[in-house]
Image 1 (cartoon, rainbow, N blue to C red):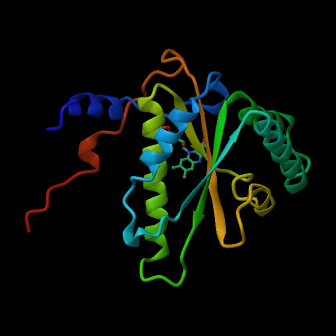
Image 2 (image 1 turned 60 degrees about the vertical axis):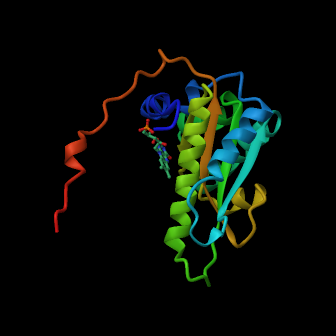
Length: 194
Ligand SMILES: Cc1cc2nc3c(=O)[nH]c(=O)nc-3n(C[C@H](O)[C@H](O)[C@H](O)COP(=O)(O)O)c2cc1C
């Protein structure tokens, strides 16, 4: 076993998503964000296609994202219930860091698209674990705004790219969110003996 591996397992076992509205200042430092992105980039990647894209949204840009969310939501689904608008408006304002996750998929490649998507999922999992290991809460959310082509374009994703959602990151209190019970392991695992 690697030194510290026991702690690593404990850290991984203690990760849980934190609702975006519970996240708060301070956010991770630039060096902590860099570390988390570097860990994301260690995800397995068939063909070394590097299919992931990460757009960092911090500071005043979060207010512009918040306005964009509300405007597009009102255009897509009028009349939008006020509670839904409030939530969409507040999430990027509460979380100090929002990361839009993008996919740049190669359609003509021998590595199938679903494998490229799996690499991105593995990268985001690494990202979530890296923020957790550095003491931050985070959650990966999708929904109508994540899949809205106008929002994707506003975030700088080109026609070849897709937005796969937003990772919200910030400080949290362990008492905010007790660790939920996980499903029973035996339900998902079996031995195969040939
Ligand atoms: C690709 C993806 C998209 C998700 N989108 C949403 C979402 O839009 N809304 C939501 O409530 N949870 C969403 N989730 C689930 C949360 O990120 C989180 O996993 C869930 O709240 C369970 O928490 P846990 O990670 O602690 O098990 C999504 C998860 C994944 C993997």
